[in-house]
Length: 246
Image 1 (cartoon, one colour):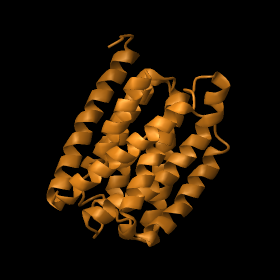
Image 2 (cartoon, rainbow, N blue to C red; image 1 turned 120 degrees about the vertical axis):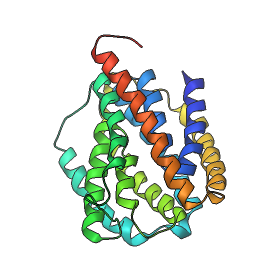
Image 3 (cartoon, rainbow, N blue to C red; image 1 turned 135 degrees about the vertical axis):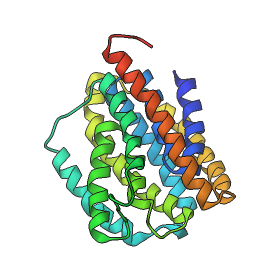
């Protein structure tokens, strides 16, 4: 299991370094296969905090600090509500919801238009993205909806999204860590000492690849990749709900 976890950490960090979200979606699915839900959430949050944190550092001069600051208000509101709520999806439903998350990127832009540069939209982004990230484990596709029409280049988008995701993953870790510890399902802590450098290396290589992509390629590939992953997760979740083991 440790070998699979470490390989998945490196590969998904590279993918996230390029596209900003697809890697986290893949990693959550891998972890959900290997671990109970609460443990998968904590491990995913830890790995993604390292990956996103390093990506934010690599592109720190591109971070839009104004957007990030406003985002924090919405994120804090979601965390306050979650602090008094107890909710955890079963594994089949986790896969179904996880698979449906990418569907939000297909919302018609003419009818549903969000821009993270607008204060109200940034607060809404922080609240909904943090909430979804805690419930389903990932929220990258929803986060992308708020940045898709923002007048920023791909480096600013990736950097700012990475910074916001660090916040959301911290909230997720805080929500699930005690249940995971109580259940005794968390992997031993030494795995993070190996996984962290792999996440940093994968993110660094992904950042170099991002630099040679065009903005058009970045947006097109992101949309189709996360949609394909989402479809696979929905199918797996439905199979599990039907009593299968595929």
